[in-house]
Image (cartoon, rainbow, N blue to C red; front, side, top):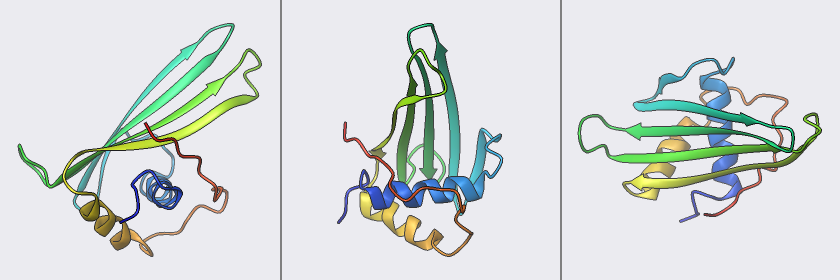
Length: 127
């Protein structure tokens, strides 16, 4: 079983994110039985700036979901805010089994167009 922090998984995750929330204005939505919530945090200063997006994906309802996944995207800038210094995405399976997350992800393949401007090489960082 491949890691949920693999480039392949994170690429597919970003593709589903982009197609399910195309304008990226929604903070809560649902994709094929998965409740998806996004929180955005930002800090700007003269020395550096950072933006975090924390995504919670939860499959199943009630007190004991089948699986729960947290995906975090970090974007960092130095004093020149037009130049990024780091862009990292990582995830953590909070509850459930990775094979069930992969099953859901595979089911989503082919259910929507991938954005043409999305880059293939997602950088992943293990925590």
